[in-house]
Length: 434
Ligand SMILES: [Fe+2]
Ligand SMILES: [Fe+2]
Image (cartoon, rainbow, N blue to C red; front, side, top):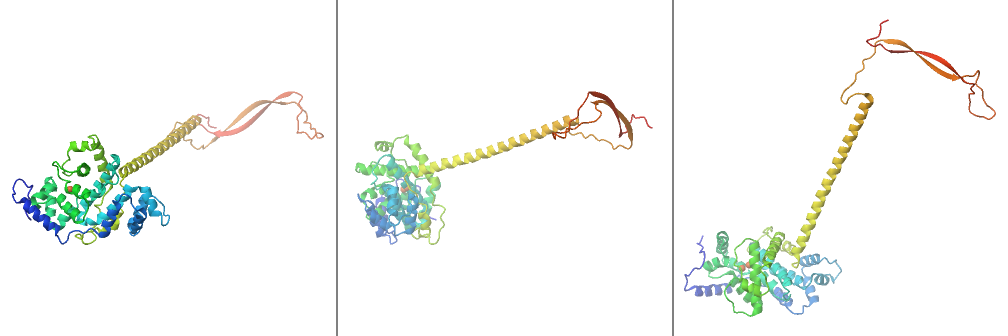
């Protein structure tokens, strides 16, 4: 394993010569990633002031996976040949352009570059939302620039595979800036390497310059609009690194304030990005074949399914989380209500049983829990009981058959009579034995 230098320090009178050498070698690198001519045509079409929507819709129809995912994200129902156009209208131009650019740029990152892809993708989503938030022109190339800003890493990794992974690991473990470790060991940073890609692919200056300068923190002599794009890209890149807990230099605050950013925005965007990272992940992909191939083809369809609508995505995640939390609380509440009802029913039943039991004990005189055992009677004692009663005085009962009336007893007064009855009762201990 080659020794990794921490940073360039002040060795090097020949550094510019070495830099020139590596730039030349990279430019002539035989495996230089190629930007598909069709991709380049679509990108330049997306950059036109007036976009030909029917033509774009026709192009999108050619990839069924992307077309179907795009329509699904828009929420537009299938309506024949106008479906894609309606989906584009529903999503809006910035979202549509971002989804198409992501679909086109993603194959430039390999399976080995999936960490870089995820970073550039989430940075690009953040930039789309910043454009909207700060009312910057939607025609800006920044979302596309953000998707390409670290393309120098896949290039350097491909150029010097094992060495580059050592450099990246060293920078990560020692928490040093990656671009400084790259400069010290390869005489070039991925920012400059990315600029070489942009030039090689004939991308315009508004893409080339921010990519090349996205790790430059000295005074830059560039037009105002270009400076705004550079600082916005640096800021979004820094926020994404912060959210991932990775080292990165923060752009000059004075410059940020000059372009309309405020200190108070920082916590908001940082929180925004953390939530975005939690919700967008490409890290679970399996390598389906050749990891060195400059394409995510093996997992491409799966990756397409991970593309999201950038504008308001985090807000949508927040709403869904709040809804989920609300439903969870309702479920818990209803469960606790159910158990309260059960508890009430149980208490009610217990009280009722107690009442019945106490009523029984009152009636019988038996205390709850006691059983009064009555022994079977072996002997019985004869007793007599005499009652005195009065009865109507009448010689004979009379009836009124003619009127068919119930039997009536006609009385001529009352007479007292006595009746005696004899019965048996169980012999008790105190009884006199016969
Ligand atoms: Fe970078
Ligand atoms: Fe970056």
